[in-house]
Length: 286
Image 1 (cartoon, helix red, strand yellow):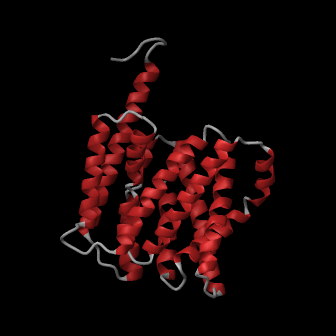
Image 2 (cartoon, one colour):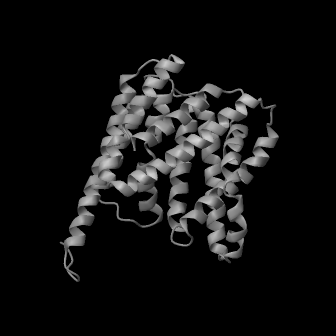
Image 3 (cartoon, helix red, strand yellow):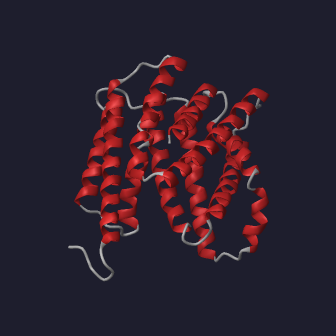
């Protein structure tokens, strides 16, 4: 999980370094095009699987949501301090809780309500509306986080209908195709150095997701989730050392509150699942 966090902070740092020299849609397209190359051999097998039309509609919705998310994210990353980007992004699992409760009918009890309220309070500490300017970059990152959360919900439904490798492959290819017309619309000349940096972004993102998957398989979420708070610490250090961004204690406090709320919910749900697993068959816990 430590390696995963470092990789994702590296992604943030490289995109921040590239700045606004390239339009967000073009940068996002190049980054995903590098990743999609590895999945192109899987496409013929996916087409031969004969997946039903509703599954393809879900793939389409996920692709659209992810296209919107990455364009918003690349736009925000060039305009918002690195630590604030990381803190706002941690709202993702909280938004997933809300969307799952509203759209999928998952139970939304008092504990989850408290988690959402605490996380939103943390977000207010990060943004502090009324005490400082909330820029278009902040709004873009909030929009990106909403779209990523909705994409995750669709991915959860797809996981029951197709193998994980297929879900990832179709997402990579569909997002690349979805970004293509947007990128062509605003295309600007790209230098070899910019291509190399965006290739590094793709490699770091892939490494981060792989390390995170290994962490989830090696330890329970209740253990790995709190470690992710270090991502905000590293983001703060990166912003201060590489981009001369001021260290904002409010961002650290807000990020800690968000991560604390998520970790508490993860720990409580893990305990509830463990209690349910220990009950004899046919016994309902009251």
